[in-house]
Structure formats: C-alpha cells, structure tokens
Image (cartoon, rainbow, N blue to C red; front, side):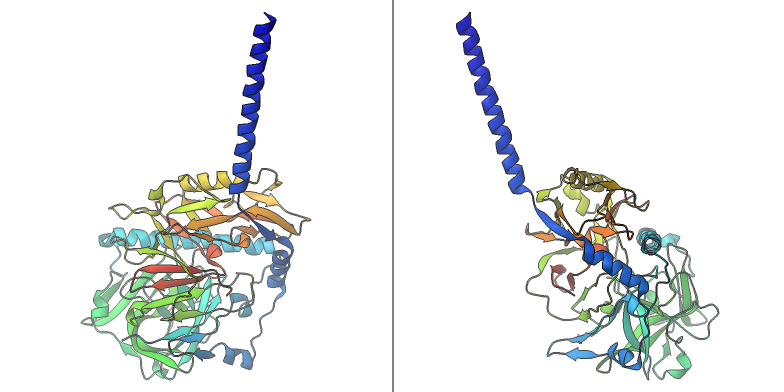
Length: 485
C-alpha cells in the first residue's frame, strides 16, 4: 500500500512539475511577445495648458510667412499652421475643450454617414441639392465641424488668401461669396466675385455641371446645394476660378462652389477644400498624381505641409487604397489586422473589406477626430488593451470613451503598443499619445477609439498625427511615414 502511495505521489510530483514548467514557459513566451512603449504624461499636460492660454495675434510678418513657398525640382511646399495659431478656442478649461471637440467629431461622423448614404441612394437626393507640382498650407481647425485642419490658398485674380477646411471625405470645394443671403462669420473677408477677373459662372452645358447630383441647373446657370449630416448646408453658383499657392503656383478654371447661402458650424474657415476621390475633387481637377499631408498634434502651435506630386518618403509603410465602386468619394485603406501589445487582435479580416453592396471596410479621413471601428472589432481590440492594463487605475471620461485611466501624479507610463498591419505584414505602430489622450488637466487619459454603429470603420486624425500620409493616386497606394511633422 505504501509503495502504491509513493508511486502516486511520485507521478503527482512529476505532473505538478511539468505543469509548472509549462506555465512558466507560457509566461516567458507571453512576456517575450509583449510589446510596450512609453506615454509621456508631463509634456502632454503642459501642452494642454498652453493651448488654452495661447492668444493668436498674427502680425504682418507672420501673415507673409503663411504663404511662404519652398520649391525643389519636383515639388512646392508651403508652411502649414495649427488652428490655434490663428483662432483662440475660447475655453475656460481643457475638459470643456475636449468635449467640444468630441461634439464636433460626432457631427463629423454624421457628415460621413450622410455622404455614404448619398452615394448608395443617389435617386433619393434633393434636386436642389499635365500635372503640376505644388502644395498648400494646412492649419488645425479645431472649432470646425467640416475639418479639423485648415489650408491657406489664394482664390481669384488678383488672388485673395483664405483659410479652407481640408476634407478628404468630400468632393465639392466651395467658398463663401458676396452677395451673402446668409453667411457665417469667417476670419478672412468674404470673397467678392466682382473683384476677380478670372471668375466664370458655369453654364448647364459644362461637363462639371453634370458630374454630381448635388449640382443642378437654373436659368442656364449651374448651381450647387450640399447639405451635410449635421444640418449644415451651403448653396450657390457653381463656377470656375483661379486657385493659387503662395506666389509661385496657380491653376486656372478650377470648379468650385460660390456659396451665397451657408449655415452651420463652419465658423472661421472660408469654405471647404475637397480632397476626396470623386471627379469634382480638387486633386482630380488639377490632375494630381499624388498628394500627402502631415497633421500636427491638435494642441500644437507648430506647422506642417500639404503637398501635391511630391515623392513618397522612403521609409513609408505602404498598403493598397481599395476601390469601392459603390462609394466614389472615400479612400478605403487596405489594412489586414490590428495589433495590441505585440499580438494580433482576433478580429475578422472582413473588418477591412467591403461587400458587394458597398458596406463595410475602413476609410481614412482627415476630418474625423476619433477612429471608429465596427462594434465587434472595437470590443475585441479594447478588451485586449484592457487585459494588458489591469493594474492601471481606472477613471471616468467623456461619454464617447468607455476605457479611461487615472495617471495623476505620474510623469511616464509604460503602455502596450497599438499598431495597424499593412498588406505586406509590417506594422504601422502608433505613438502612445495617438491612442491615449488627455481629456482634462487632472491626468485622466482615455483610449481614443470608439465603436461605429454603422457598417463602416474610419481612421481618424488623432491616430494620423505626426505621420506623413501619402496618397499615390496613380498606383492606388497609401503610405505611412513616421516622420515628425
């Protein structure tokens, strides 16, 4: 009997030893696979306070610099300026500023959904409703629904300079025009067509007047009417004008809307510079082979550039721009997976694909702030992130965010990495500040992703910050270069 007990004890000891060995092996394997980075708390909180106290008062010298052009043999490059170097946000505290941004982001999401539905249901619309190399300035436009970043361009002959919202999710550019039936407040004087020698109304026979359902004909005059998903709208004459870039480059007869009735939350900008993939988009009209931009941090006073026909940076990670025949405006990005902490999230690959009805997939958008993922994908990604951060103190944030942390009193935090996998299997790894964002002055940080309750995912501009995003329109490729703006 004792021998039997000793034998059983021996086998139990072996089994326990083997189990412990396997557990230790699994722990080592898990540890070796884990990927982390550092979130620097102090600099971001300092920057958040600076954005509230900054008082932009452009001097004549600064205004001249807004249009400074740098040239090479292959491209023009104009300076880009953040929104708060031009407009004061007028918020008493950072938490209020964040909430106003998220409110605009919600309105922007409605704009995207409206454009999406317009493409799918064209019949239901209201009936009113050789390449040169150059670039234009971008400015962060935080208080605008129709774009979080601004670009500075000239319109007319002689050229007058205007701040325009950069929008990769629309294809009709427009500017507020005299006479104003209804115009909102903008930072520049409203464009006066009578003072431009290059102003030309389009007739109903013009090809541009037949390209889109939002453009119609009245008394042989081409007119446009665009209503956005947040209730904002613009309407007026569809015309051609000269668009210029500083003092060195210009394009004649660019079709844009001359808006006499404009309402909504566009305040500050003169209108929209549309960089979508439709035939009326600005880039299509100027026959651009490519364009790229680098978005500065939304709290920054630094500058960056919007460039056309410049070479893609050599260190770019590239993936396909997918063509959705049902959606002509949006740029669909061909990611293949999402990686958290060095491990791929078990989300279906179909998350990044669209079906025969045009539903699904992921678009890249300059105007959306927070990246939206289809609900199942979001929950899986969030849960994996939470599994790596169980020791972090949780906190409550704005209603959009369900995963927030209390980092008060800390200067640096080690956090799991977040990456998007491109088509060749390489990872575009985001800086920590591009997915853990400060939402108040007290050290509350939130995971800057949200679920999409619509069959579409959107790569927002928080995740794009600090990366040169290059759109190779000839070869249908998008590149991500982790260079500093």
